[in-house]
Length: 267
Image 1 (cartoon, rainbow, N blue to C red):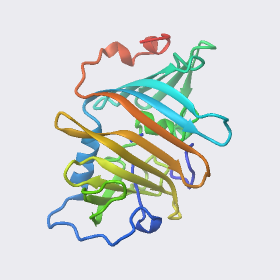
Image 2 (tube, rainbow, N blue to C red; image 1 turned 30 degrees about the vertical axis):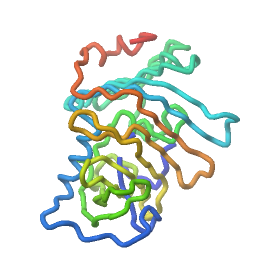
Image 3 (tube, rainbow, N blue to C red; image 1 turned 45 degrees about the vertical axis):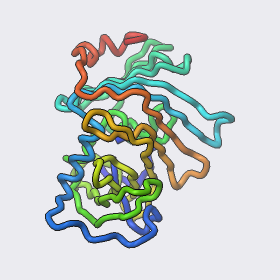
């Protein structure tokens, strides 16, 4: 399933020579567990039931002005169910995405059509952005589909003065349904928040970089509210996501995750 292909938010892998870190890594403290660090980073961004309101901005040489889109998402982690509704712009409003593992459906209101998105399209661009369908509905798992190796400690991660970071290499299992050859992630040592993620193809070339900033405390979590996605092989392209609201451990009506709800113009 893995391919050396760039898909046009939440996976991680990095090569140290990529430029994400300019200095030498320090050795990790004795007893550090890479898998546990990866789990805590994942838990900082996701609860068992999570609601997100966000605005996404897409910049491309192919469009004269940046495209801005607002959406809401609902996720139920243990059942692998998720739902996304586009709120604006008007031409896309009401578009919906429903994942009932292992299937993903998309509803297009202007033609009143529901279509199933096959696994072969999970790594395709989501709504014209530099994120993929899989990034948004998380069909692949940064915990279950990868093994983890602690490469060291970055004492000065770029853009985060005063915060050192674990540098974790994510290596996909042989039969995992993922596209990346590997991922390397910078994870804040104190707050457990992801700071940067670099995505590589099977030849070891970094193709995409995600950077996280505007880290705010929500309960016992420290959560980045600004995500920047840069495809490194496509000059002039970028996607940013501004999180307007996180709700962790939310009460979610089970009817959210239904095809009936998918066909509604609004929740």
